[in-house]
Image 1 (cartoon, rainbow, N blue to C red):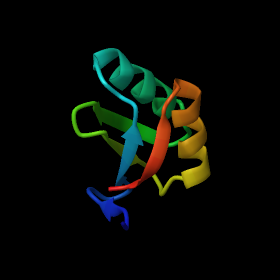
Image 2 (cartoon, one colour):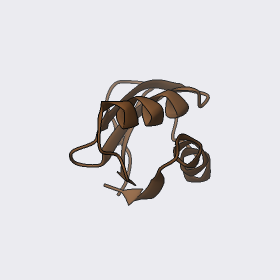
Image 3 (cartoon, helix red, strand yellow):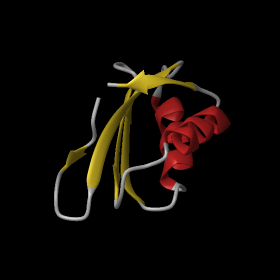
Image 4 (cartoon, rainbow, N blue to C red):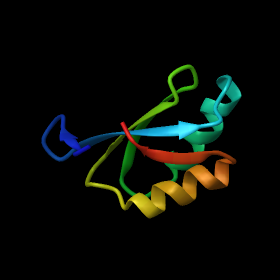
Length: 79
């Protein structure tokens, strides 16, 4: 459950989000997470419930949880 470093200066974390069922859901989650400071890339996959976030530094999990909540879904943990 630790973040992995992809390229110098970037961190990739994979989260589990419950309730996503379609492309609109993916877009809502991606949109909210993209607004977090330092986030450079977000890929949400409804079929697996996984959301991959690339950022310039490790993200505060409570900030991620709040963004997912704002989108109308639930962060259930790290993948």
